[in-house]
Image (cartoon, rainbow, N blue to C red):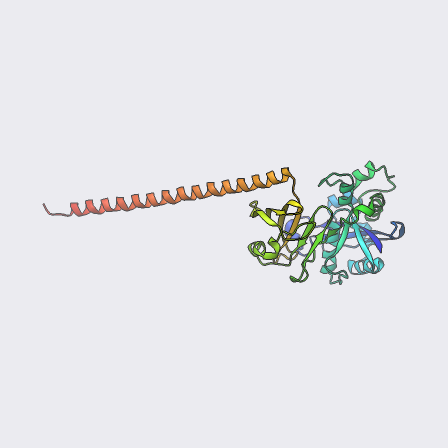
Length: 349
């Protein structure tokens, strides 16, 4: 299997009102390096693209890439040709290696916009080299820029950053220095296309966590109430665990829970509700990880805060209801007094 180390440069509308909803970012350059299973370079792909949706480059795009409108008009080809040429160049058996998840999403959006058939099926697994570097360096959720990592690894800078083929080359250089035997198992899953039905739903197991991706639901409430979404299988033995704290919301789009496996101890769960690519529904991504004492205390504190907020809200609602009732009673009492006075005023002497 080959590795396709991909990098893209793109342009966008100058103003939100001019943005094309289906494709907010238009690709203007594709750069890719093909590596064999030993991470040795065997080929490369580089192509400038003439923009059709946002025909003029933003000043910021020019500053970052160094490209000019004339460059694309003179040397660029239309994406209908560039996209298909790139897919043909990739071949059949490969996995994408990308610096962060954004480029892959933008590639798929551009392909879909121009009705170019996307050849890969769900689930699309890829290697996020930015994440793998953070794992190897034990930096947790910290995400470094490509320029920072190239400097930290003392990799020679042979060309400018923010040009697609150069950035693909630099990403490939970093990838070669990753302990692939250990960290390649920490692949990422693309969310551009999600499971079509419950039979395509899948749980992916990694060394330190599991990830489940659901099918589409119409509403957030529907997703959160779904039995499969709310399950808590053990990361190791995969048996259903006993919930110590049932799923509760943080007030946003995340839900938390604690559960215990008789064999492997306490674990924490998190459900994130995400909007589908076409904004026609939502889907759930559930992760389960071993739970430390600090994690347990954090989740317990979240629930306590939520309970306190609900209690305060109910108290305010009760006070407001009581105040409204009291005001209504005072209004009725005043009306009766007025009516009584009117009647007394109308009596003959």
